[in-house]
Structure formats: C-alpha cells, structure tokens
Amino acid sequence: MAEIKPTAPVKATTVQAKKSSNLISWIAPVVCIIAGYAIWRFMMGNPDGFSQPDPKGGFWPHHLKPKGAFNRIYEGGIIVPLLIGMFLMVVVFSIERYLTIRKALGKGSISDFVRKVQYHLANRNVDAAIAECDKQKGSVGNVMKAGLHRYKEMISESNLNTEQKVLSIQKEVEEATALELPMLQKNLVFLSTITSVGTLIALLGTVMGMIRSFAALGEEGGGGSATNDLAVGISEALYNTALGIGTSAIALIMYNVFTTKIDSITYGIDESGFTLTQSFASLYK
View (cartoon, rainbow, N blue to C red):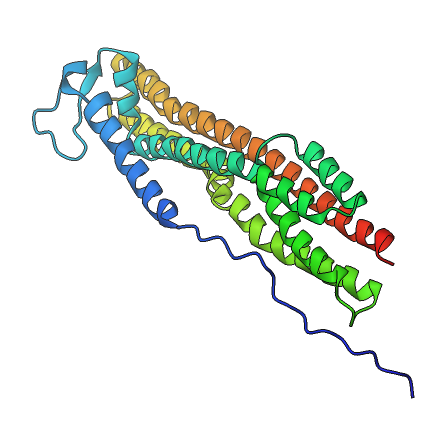
C-alpha cells in the first residue's frame, strides 16, 4: 500500500469579515426621494415663481405661467421629484463609494508595494514584508498580510510537503480576497440601476406630458391657443427627458470610474497572491 503522509489541520483564515452597515442603503434612497419632492414642491413650485399660483396649495399645486426656466421644470409633473431624487442618490452613493474605494486603495502605488514585498521575501525577511502591509493599509495590503502570516507558518511546518504548503498559502489569499471584494462592490448596484432606469422613468414622464398636451389640444379644438398650449406642454414634457438622460449619464460615468478602480485593486490582489506562492515555491523547496 502507498504510504499516506500525515497532514496538518487546515487553519481558518486570519482575516476577519469586515463589519459594514447597510443603513445607508436603506435610508439614502428614501431621504433622496423626499428631498427631491421638497426641491420640486417648495423651490421649483414656489408660488412666487408663477404668475398664476394655485391658492389651494396641497401635495401638487397646479400653478400656471412660470416666470423662469427653473419654475418651468415644476410643470414637468410628479415624475420630476423622482428624477431629482435619483440624481441625489447618484451624488450620495458616488461620495460613499469614493471614500470607501479611496480607503481600499491604501497608501502609495500598489505596484511599488508589491515590489517591496517581493524584495523582502527574496531576502527571507517575512516580518519586514508584513510591516510593509501595515504601512499600505489597503485591501491589497490586507490580503497580502493574511497570506504572509500563513506564509510564515508554512516555513516552520514539517507535516506538509512544498506543494501542500503553497496550496495552503493560496487558499488563505483566496479566503481573504473573498472577504475584501464584497466591500468594494457594495452599493454599486444603485448606480448601475439608475443608469438603466433613469432614462425609462424620464421617458414615462415625457409620455405623460405628451398625453396631457394632446388631450388639451383635442378639448380646445385645435385653435391658436390650443397650439400654443401644445408647444408649451411638449417643452415641459421634455424636461423629464433632459433630467433623466443627465442623471443616467452621470451615473454611468461614476459606475465606470469606480469599476475601473476596483479592477486595479483586484489586479493588485491577484499579483500579490502570485507573488507569495511563487516566492515560497522557489525559496522553500
């Protein structure tokens, strides 16, 4: 029978799951929609901005003859506060993602950090490599640090062969990566969703405005006044399209910016894992 080599028990990852609250994911959309309504109702719909304000007030006052372009957007209808709220969501989640990803990038260049770790490992100075991870303070440093701790343990491990030790280091890096990446990608779904949905909601507002305009044209019999109302109604409806396209465009730009940053971090993590396994395989055969 073939000899069965004893194997050491596999230790759990040294990296702890990051505790991050989902509070902003629940509160921000609601607050943004409420703020969008407040801007539409009390700023764009300020009675002083209309020649014929609605004295009844209420949830959706029917003011007439806006004095300026800002007040004219109010006549785009109830879809406008939704679009404003979505724009505010883009701003809020862009700031939140920027701060999170900036922290995840850590200090200094990722490529320079990996080269420093490679240098220390080539000189068999694992503690100095771990110290570099503490200085980096980013996601790549966190993953590298977890791998280095397992790397250090495997140097003195006598119950495993080199291949098993390399696999153990690789598994540690993979587990640490699995804990880091969700934190980077969190809340990007809001930006990607707004990119797609913003234009559709704006189109809905435009169609509703067109329906109201043509209905008014039919009721008034197509006279000069009706034609004027139609032109005004179409211009008002197009404000919805403009707001939706603008919001979707900004959301798409920010989404691409953040995904590019995340890709660079992911590449650095992959490079760090490759560095650890190749270094151990070459130095501790």
